[in-house]
Amino acid sequence: MVGGQTMMANRSEPGSYDKYFGYYTFSASLGQMVGSLLGGIAGGSNGSLPKSTATAFLVSAVLAFIGVLPILFTKSLKVSIADKVAASDHKVKARDVIKNPGLKSALFTSAAVSSTVDVLVIFLPLFGQENNLSPVVIGTILAIRSGASMLSRLFLGELSRRFGSKRIMILSGLVATITIGSLILTTNVLIIEAIILVAGFALGIGQPLTMAWVSLASAPEERGMAISLRLTGNRVGQFILPVGAGLVAGSMGVSSVFLGLAGLLAASTLVSNRYE
Picture (tube, rainbow, N blue to C red):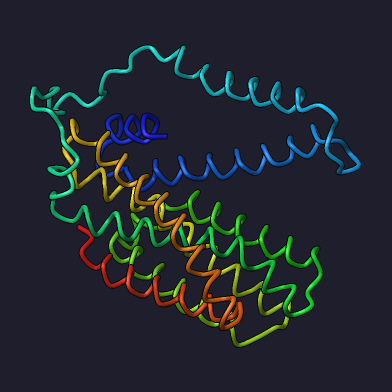
């Protein structure tokens, strides 16, 4: 992931980061969707687990090989922009890179958005169970969120061109904050689906824009480290936030988790005002 995102940044013009990172994250989401479908097929049409996992591992190996093919046939892996800074003799250190202006804000925003999506995926089924929603309905709601995020990523380049990256970042954060917080106000299925549709679209924007933000906030020779820091921050958030959300849900109910997520998104939206 670090290599792919670094290559995307170093082989693109800064003005095109939003568009190409949008395509990148759209492709990742599409791959996860297709992979889930293939996993279901490998598991058997009746939904039961196979006696042997060999088929699943074989399918995974084939998919991994397919993913390597574009790299094997790439004519050059050198940076494609002539005026990029040549490889520096200076050893890149995490503590130096994180001091770059705006990078800490980008890392926090990225971790907040990615953790929010993870917690939603975990707690929406619990929310449905608490409100007597069927598994089919919850599955549909989760699919709506995923599809809406993919849609926003596909058209992110055009949105950024028309309205500006910073404005899109702030607006998507505000919309996500309001919609996630409003989930506590209703148990009507159609209203929940409408809320998740809008929230999913807004949340889909955060990850590619923070990828672009991190890339802009770091020099070419630092981007690998900067992107590593971003992914590390995401993983830390994805570990800590669900644990905290579980403690909150256990004492105050599942709905309270959505208020907490709204608060986190509000904080990240304030921070994203520093986006340049």
